[in-house]
Image 1: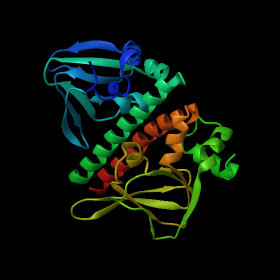
Image 2: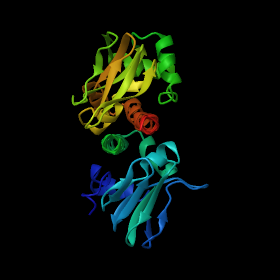
Image 3: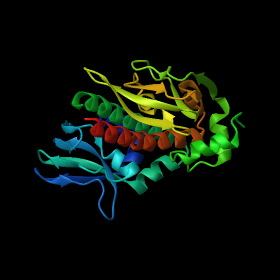
Length: 138
Length: 152
């Protein structure tokens, strides 16, 4: 079902079900601001349906499409100053809390290893895209 | 047990992204590392080269250089204990940044094959290392972006 989704494609069958149990499903209306970090929570999101606009005061604006993960930086290192996410359309999202992520990667089995490999690859790709954007904007 | 001194391990741990690892765990991580020396002024990591290794600065310092279409920007200097080349390593991509030695360098390098073999063997230490590097790339990227904005 989710084989085209970043991160979720790392696992299939029962393992994917196990991972999906750690996610919450949320819906947001067009124009809503999506906040990965608030005073009492930290989330990263997988966009299932709809589009989200990311705006960063250093890097400009870009569109997040279905299947993409966002908010990982905020989940790992905290608030990214000057960055915001806005739903361009009504969106369906899966969210993952910091605690759930810790549970995912802390199991120490082959499943958690695969998740760690996938997450680190996504972190690297997100960072690499930002370096390329930075070079264009300088 | 790696060949690195506890002093070098201490400097690497002090930089943050490996702070959650004990000295013994760091020795285990660096057990298969190799050491490379680079002369001052030489390129430690070339832009455009595929990132098949992750590198720590055991001694010396590098300039992080971002090439735009018009000119190279020398953004920030990183010294002992910092990891370099992490972004492209995790992204499995070619290096977009260039690292030039501003002082003679001693680099400690772990090849991708070593990390992948450990992961294949379900060594949880290396899974934690990947997550630590994932946090580390964003912290380092913020440094680079701030320097780039100041350079505008």
